[in-house]
Image (tube, rainbow, N blue to C red):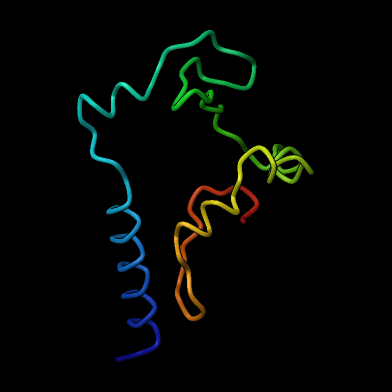
Length: 99
């Protein structure tokens, strides 16, 4: 197997894993989304009480790198719950400047 095909298989495996982590869209999961008054930064819909942001380009990088981001978003809890181990591969999809 070539290096290129090994990379392709890892990518496919990562996409399958990522897809398996998404909640199924059901009537119960639809209740997690709520319409709210839109702000300049949001789309007028919330998920679990937090407004969904507008799509962001590179111009939003400074906001993503703000000091309070870790306190507000608690990425440490996510990483602990994922149970990542040395040698595991992770795909950082839609994470702006990366995490």
